[in-house]
Length: 251
Ligand code: GLP
Image 1 (cartoon, protein in one colour):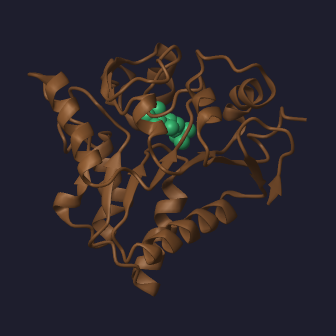
Image 2: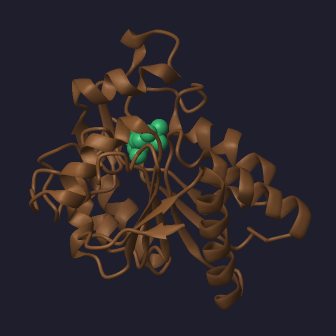
C-alpha cells in the first residue's frame, strides 16, 4: 500500500481490493475491542464495499467477532421500493452482511422512506444516531459525479438527512442493479453531508477506472464546493483507499 503525497484528503493506493478490505476490517476490529463490542458503524452499499463485508463475515464465522451489540446506520435508501425489493439497500445489506452474522434486528437502521411526514421522520433518524452516541466509523463509496451517500453535486456541506432527487447519471450508473433501467427510482433519502461529517472516522473505498476522473478532480483540483467528496477535506480523520485503476489519472 502506497500513501499518495500532497493530497487534500489522505489517500492510499492498494494493489488490489483485498488489502484495503483487510486493513479496514482490522480497524473495525480494533475499535470494537476498544469499546467492548459497543460500536456504531455507518455503512454503504454499491460494489465497492462487498469485499469488506465478505471479510467481516469471514471473521465472524472463523474468529467470532460479536456483532450483537453493534449498531449500524446505512447512508441511504431509495424512495418508493418495497423493503424486500432485491435492489433496495435494505435487501443488499441483508444479502451481503447482516444475514450471515449476529446483528440484532433492532440494531440495524435505514433512513426512513415514509411518504407522510418524511421531514419529521428524518429528524427522528438523526436523533437516533445521536442517542446511540454518534457514528464511530463511517464507510463511504463515491459516485462517478463525486456524490457521497446520495448527496448529489451541489448538496450543501452542512445538509442533514433528507429526500433528494437523483441525478440522471446516478440512475444510469445504478441501473445495473435493476432488471429494467426504468425501474430505478428518481428519489432517495440520504444522510446529509453534515451528518456524514459528524462521524468520528470516514473511510472511502473507490475501485476501478470509472472513478479515476472524479478522483483527479478532487485530489488534484481546486476545493470545488459543488463536489460532495470535497467535504472530506474538512474532516480530521478521513482517508481514501483506492486501487491503481482509480488512481490512473493522479500522476
Ligand atoms: C450508490 C450509493 C453510494 C455509493 C455509490 C458508488 O450511488 N448510493 O453510496 O457510494 O453508489 O457505488 P459503487 O461502489 O458501486 O461504485
